[in-house]
Length: 207
Picture 1 (tube, rainbow, N blue to C red):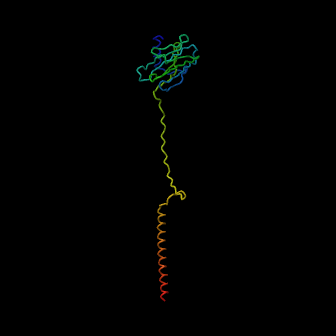
Picture 2 (picture 1 turned 45 degrees about the horizontal axis):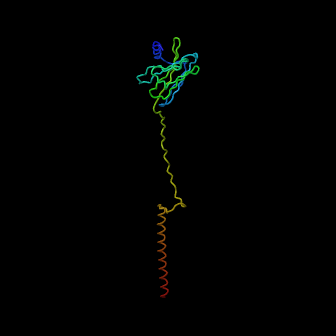
Picture 3 (picture 1 turned 90 degrees about the horizontal axis):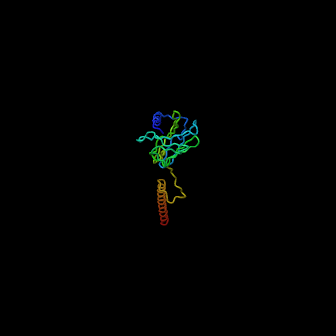
């Protein structure tokens, strides 16, 4: 393209808002390094022979953040590349009134806004742009941490069938002591009665 035309292009890009005549898709892409990216641009009202140019504005704070011409598809010449474009990773092809931009093995330096453009007489028409973000590691959505539910303590009564040893509760000890005291009292009464009977027999024998 002629230098004067690119100066006109740079001036119009400064106030770029995008046009509904050129429909770009998708609006934004977040992708990991070394993946492939596909963008499309469809000219709704332009004839099939209209050339669709692809431009890129690198993402700040890149020192090379100006708009640069990447490539276009020419029916006679095929793909026409801009200067310093890595041709082995960028491909452009057309499908009727739609232009497809294919990027392979992308890296963070490829991040930026990609525009498609058509040249009329004399106006220039732009798409709304596709924001491409290339990262080494995709961000993950943090899941809210759930607080552990405290377990309720359940008191189990001792099972007389499965219990292997005697229970040592206060009630059992009390019953055991009462039983021992009862046995001692009964033994004392029995001994006393035995002594009384023996004395009565001795008295009878003496008489």
